[in-house]
Length: 441
Ligand SMILES: NC(=O)c1ccc[n+]([C@@H]2O[C@H](COP(=O)([O-])OP(=O)(O)OC[C@H]3O[C@@H](n4cnc5c(N)ncnc54)[C@H](O)[C@@H]3O)[C@@H](O)[C@H]2O)c1
Image (cartoon, protein in one colour):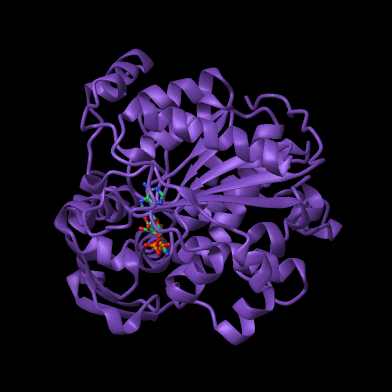
């Protein structure tokens, strides 16, 4: 049985958005919102800004915009805060990221962008070796780092006079760390912080600092950050929304649309080879094998969960799945991805699908970051703490309750998201059964 509809506090006052990392995605997000606010750009790709939601029967003709249906913070009420390893303000960082056209989308809001200066990062080189900025909190203990981030959050709240906050990780992907004993309980996690244990990465300190200050946390990268038992439990007990991991853009987005189609038609799969070239700083960080491993884990799991080989071993029991990212500077943020998909049909006859996606990484990621910020704030005001599985739609490796497998199919994720919004607002769930249209004929 679904629990009763929550009471949602109004989105009054200002929303502080704390973005960890001021790189390609963050500057594209910030500039896009600032342009949209001024009517100088359209927030395409964003469900909260452009999406509609059907309510009631198909015959009722009720399909409001999502932003008119649920009480979301207005773009005009957003205040930005950020941290980075480099001291560049958002104007310089956006220009350097090379995603947006300077004349059209950076100069027009240059004053606002110049006013957004990153706070020194909680950073240790061993978690992202290909970065060597020195705008950091220095070589201090993990405990001191945690306290410094908390102090930054509180200073930001006071200086900018914001009423609520959300933190989103848009910083580089850290080296691969598996959840271990240190991540199981808050006691073991606290002890590991005091012992400067290697298994405590900066992203975890940002996430913990956010939770300690009652701030929802969303994780756009594949590193663990908030995705571990101790922080999950803390967020649940303290009723703070969390979600992750890794924005679902580009190739994985395609995969979670195409693989459900194969499964729906019972077409077999023998191999899926995905490769891409990417020349931005993200690509450079991911060029280090230990950082790529974090990304690889996030990308590989998707097919297995969608195809469920154990249920149809003859169709999906022997799939060769390969994913690679190649750092290729000339393309900058304009990623090109190639997928070669070997499938088979009736009587086992082989066929192939080729996908060549010439995308723009940050153009795809920025609207997801905006939606995650606004929906995390909505969840907080609706009193929904812990993992927000309805936000799986945005992630490559959705965080789910222990014992559950993640739902990767984009359209199931979309249904889950919209049904959650309907539930929040006391509207009927849409099941697509549709018997009622035929009963009175
Ligand atoms: N763009 C996409 O389509 C996409 C999709 C999925 C995930 N991501 C992830 O989003 C993240 C951001 O991507 P991007 O293209 O903006 O990368 P980017 O390299 O342009 O920006 C990341 C920024 O984070 C900073 N940083 C690193 N460690 C930090 C720390 N500890 N504290 C504060 N700042 C820190 C870096 O200096 C850099 O400026 C990456 O982890 C990437 O893997 C991006």
